[in-house]
Length: 88
Image (cartoon, rainbow, N blue to C red):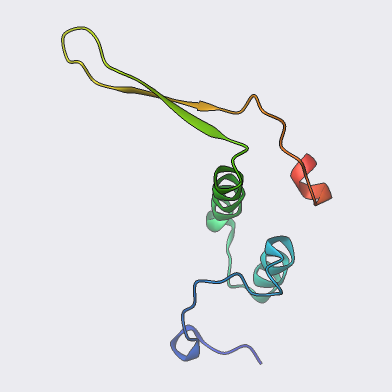
């Protein structure tokens, strides 16, 4: 029996021995993650790539009337994959 949300303690680590794909599968099958929450796995992968240094952010100082800084995300580097799902 799966405990209700009121009986689950919050935590910050990834369960399932830090295998995010296995956790996503189990959580989807258990009904914890719904279709509307699918963007969470993509965000987790992006944050992992940023943490590991595969994705970089660059900033250009603003020019013109408003002088607002511009930020770019650089995906041009190679991102090594450990899981077949990351290759898709």
